[in-house]
Amino acid sequence: MIDPLVLLAFLPAALALNLTPGADMMFCLGQGLRGGPRAALAADAGIGLAVMGHVTLAGLGLGAAVAAMPWLFDAIRWIGVGYLLWLAATALRGDGAATEIPAVRPARAFRQGLAVNLTNPKVILFVLAFLPQFTDPARPVLPQFLALGAVLSLGGLVVNGAVGVLAGGIGRRLAGSAGFNRWLGRVSASIFAALALRLALLPKA
Image (cartoon, rainbow, N blue to C red; front, side, top):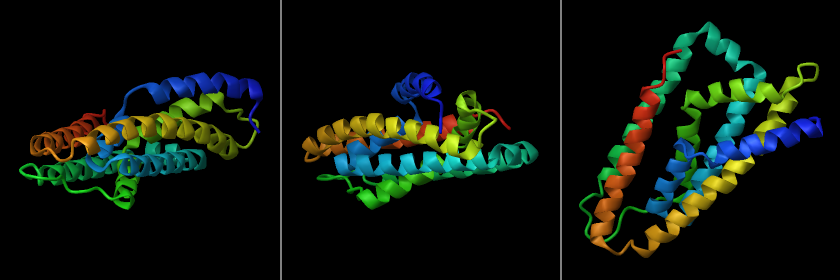
């Protein structure tokens, strides 16, 4: 178990991180605009599951593997860049639609959120740098990482989900406008492309 005082110190730090706009929040925003609240919440759930995956891998010692094999970091990073660019191209396909943008099904949004977060090696590096500050090395590390990661993931679910649902409500109300649909395709593509660029410009391992 985590010391209650350590947990009290971790909560505001985690909340501040959750409230800081980042790749996950922007992705949920884009999915909400394109697919509505359900798609936004599904993407949010995928991201939350991926974060726990990163936390588990970090607790199991992936940091040592990345340090020993720097190419692993770059391989994951470029897979993520390619996937985000593919999402951007997909969003632009409906740019000239006259009536309605292609719907984003919740199951697909979940898979995309999971994939986008898992292929962002910056998350694993963040976990490795942040969580050990609140971990007692005298106790088993993995359970502590999982507990802290659950708090961080839950905060992200609430904040990013709220952003996505708000965007989804606006997007669905305006979905009948051809002009809005064209604008939406470009905005969604821009979000995905910006996330790809951000990932591509990460310092090499």
